[in-house]
Image (cartoon, rainbow, N blue to C red; front, side, top):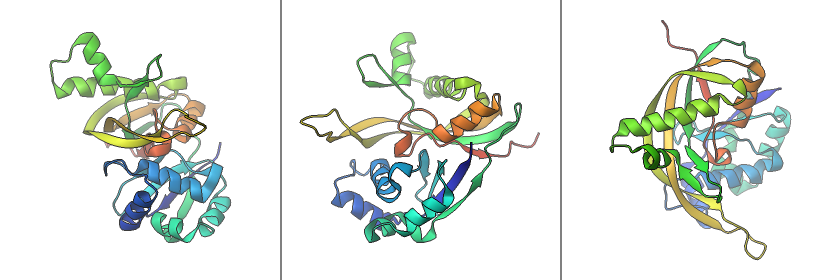
Length: 238
């Protein structure tokens, strides 16, 4: 499996104006849907996910298995308003490691939407579900524990990785736009509020193929809207 890391630098003013013009804001909390729409308008079916928008000098980072030259060509041919909003004049791409040795330890950071889908098709905050079952006492530590257990399960899918330690660095509730159920052939966008958590820590690669697939796929739900990109770094010195 080949993997590319891409970067562009969305212009905050133009991004907000573009999102407002097309009705793709959710009360100003989150621009994930607008970025998803811009990436799709530029790259079509090759639109990268997962991605992470930092809103600072780092811009937007994303993983993709698609050909780098094809992505560059699509960026060059984007419509002027899309090109300006995404800051594609500074588009860059490079090969990202796709082979990982079992037992390798890595630092990580990931922004996630820790939710589970119920049998009825609804999404529930995993902390709220745990609190209803076991009680939470109202402590932030209980939230961190519930989200941490969820994160460990997600990273362990297909025996990809084992979390050595993880810390909840930030949490808030954010409103996002998502497509609702189809009505008369259309899927109107709906405003949905959910948990928005930032974790950092260290993990150990278990199955190399599973870990490579995890990087390309992302962690949890809403990966096409700015969640789930697993950013890696060297582990802390002993």
